[in-house]
Amino acid sequence: MKKIGRITFAATVALLLSLTQASAQQKFVSSVGAVFSPKACGLTCNLGDGNLLRVVGDLEDVLTGNSKYPGIAGQYFMVFYKQLSKDDAIRRVRFYGGPGLCAGWVADNNITDFGAMFALGAVAGISIDGGGRYSVDVGLSANVGIHVVPGNEYDTKIRLYRNGYRKAWMPEITIKRAF
Image (tube, rainbow, N blue to C red; front, top):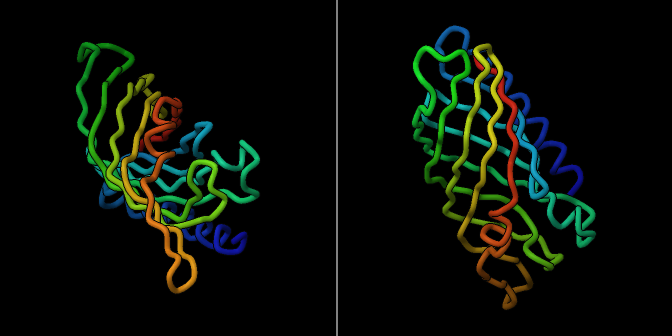
């Protein structure tokens, strides 16, 4: 599991760096950053002005001591923005929110077995841009889906993914750099 996590993390960093290089010519990536939360930490990438792509390590069971290793999940959100500050303001404050899709290899609430997670998601928050290239987002995200834990030939378990909605109240802080 450690090796799979390291390979996935390295591939994600390489992908985000290659997208950043391409963004100088094509403006495909508008910002890259990191997301921090008690439930997950990872990398985030805004593709244009309305698509948010995140790869996160699912930390909840690691922090509670139920697992030695974090899970990993990919999240895609279609984000809509509503500007809250005036157009001539030095700081730009925007509300954002939108639906999304999530998938990953994670453990669920107090279940030590890892399994595949497939979910519909939602994200909402406030983005504060200080007038430069850096911005800080504070938000919430939730997922509702299934958790498939493989077993032997007749023992595969399909459950509701409980961490997705039980931990929706945990805030996420994202620090991004715009291009």
